[in-house]
Length: 489
Image 1 (spheres, rainbow, N blue to C red):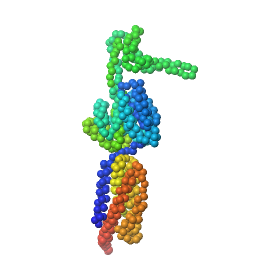
Image 2: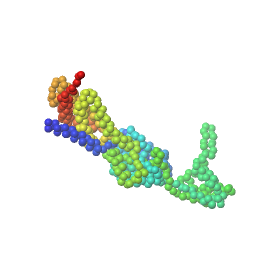
Image 3: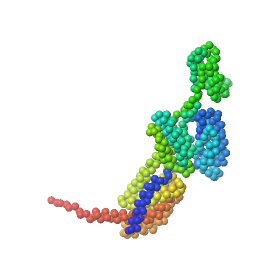
Image 4: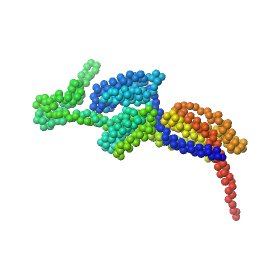
């Protein structure tokens, strides 16, 4: 009796240990894949020209192509804001490069940082992508605010703060508010005195820089559009405006610089929105060995520490948001699976007691699964959760092998419960030990089975005996109650 009570306490202890391990084990969404492909986003200085951006892009392509693990690289500039470019790299087969795609990115990161005025952010292509907008990294955190000024003020502060988090890499932002703009300031009185109208100024600037179609040339097989514009050397910088002349009402040409000057200023290249509110998205990758749960917790802590006002609120997007949703539903999913197992077993055995005996084998399996994840430095992700659900079925099957045999021996051979469950342990040991290994699915299964099989042969008989005695006591109590008296007239 004393040994049985001790083993029963061990079962209760494993339940508590499960709750603790579930809280401390690192969590993620999907395991990082190596598909042999890498995508890159080039973000250059916001005042850069297209030709300068193309030069930066070529320098990045050269560095990536020199890596021995890279097979081909494709890149193009333009699209979206004027200071961004895209890159697509195909890696050599894994047996040739010997390292993963994430390790290739880590090796390239230091070399790519040597290009001034631009940055290339790389991420390994994943087969499963969940929502989110395009960003320079795999995971995204979006800030929104009622007022654009507050958003522009706090987004760079938060980005600078989370850039210091050890678990994050390649932190970048889609905030584009420092583009250069040249404003033409016209002296109305001087222009009027020189006989220059605003309509003439507008028409001249449109003819010079608006790429206005003025005619068509029809040939034998094709037709060609004739576009009016200034020569390319006058389009590269605002100094070209000094060579512009405007026709006055008298027909004379007046230099634009005689009645106007140019004022440079900053202007937003893009203003993103999510829903009806302006938004700024911070993108980030994970450091080697870091988990998404650690990154989410650190980012939320950083936002609280810097004192972001309540009207500026942030939320994770894409895969990070899907991770949070899955994390919230994991306990419900596991409890639902346990409830379904209990109902099925209750119908099978026509008993409320024996299903509890079988379910008592699951806590030790859960401890083994979570300890295996910690031992092999793996996250509890969607694949691991599938393994736990599968583990519930396998461990339940092991207990059923024992309980089903014990119930039959006890009922058909009229043997006591102690002898029945003892024979079940001896005869069903070999079938219980039959299982398989598969990583990462196998980590949760094998880890749970290793510890579960060490304890199931001890805990299951004890739980069975205690509940059998409880059931016997309930039956005796019901039988000892006197029958109600009946009165007859």
